[in-house]
Each structure stands twice: as C-alpha cells, then as structure tokens.
Image 1 (cartoon, helix red, strand yellow):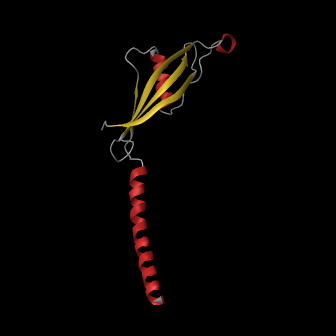
Image 2 (cartoon, helix red, strand yellow):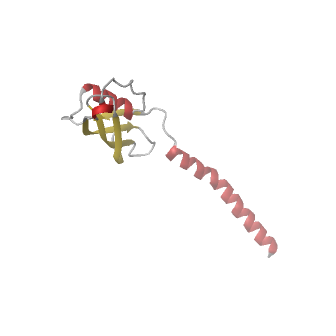
Image 3 (cartoon, helix red, strand yellow):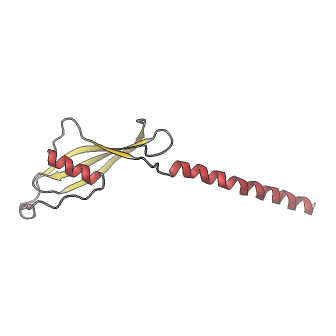
Length: 129
C-alpha cells in the first residue's frame, strides 16, 4: 500500500512538472508585446486645438520629448487653458483578438505656452487590425 502511494505521488508530480512549461508558454503568448506596434493619435473633426497644440499633444501621448517651452508670461498672468479629447490607438497591442488598444484622453493645453497635460478617461481593446 505504501509503495502504491509513492508511485501515485510520483506520477502526479511528473504530470504537474510536464504541464507547467505548457502553462508558462500560454501565458507568455498573451502578455508578450508584439514586435510591430503602431501608434496612431486621433483628434475629433471639430477639435479646438491648433496645429501647434496637436503636434505637442501627439508628441506627449507618444512619449516623445516635448519641445523647449516658449517664452511667455503664463507664470505671471496664468495659463489660457484649452480642453478637448484625443484618442491613442495602439495597433496590434496584443496577439489575441481584439488586438488594438484604444485609449481616450482628456487633454488640457495652454494657448500661450507648451503646457500640456492628459488624463486617461477610457481604455478598451477594439477590433481594428
């Protein structure tokens, strides 16, 4: 009886050890970012942002360096804020469907300087690619 318990335990341990690499590979496929990620910034058709502000927002949402601040008197008289939304779509963000990540941001910029802040308001996966 004791010998049978040892064999059963050994078989169970062997089965568990064989299943662990399979589970590990499956989890890696779901979380591993693909090599070819494309990011697209989308503004509403009737956006209130100027071309300079859209460029600043695009660089900010894509994680690029922002240009050096424009010399202004915002520190003295305060910012002149402009609010609107922008969407960042990361194409092929994951390997399973839906693949593309759509994030909606509430963006605040200043008309007179390079101030820009964004607040993530919605994030969801969409069927795109």
